[in-house]
Length: 88
Image (cartoon, rainbow, N blue to C red; front, side, top):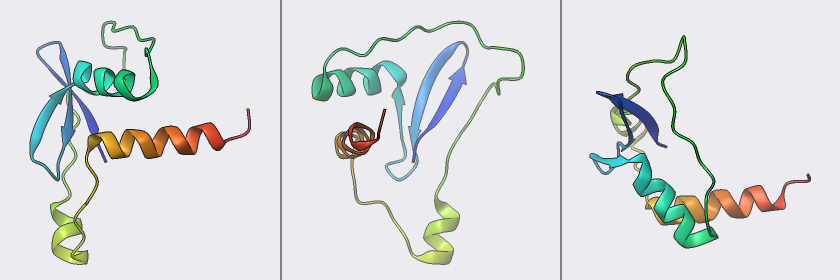
């Protein structure tokens, strides 16, 4: 689970289970390391886009006892594997 966050014009990714912030460029770089170049374009916020999005799993942890066990690289690999299996 990750959420995009815009803070003073900079997009960031929140990995709530690790309680750390990642710039979107870190996620793109990790994806490129695993899968090759990632085409992307960063533009201005569109009408209706939230200024700030933050994910937090505290409720899942409290009520379900669930905590994530996969790091960013593993999540990217899993997502790419899943996507590649999809019919096009």
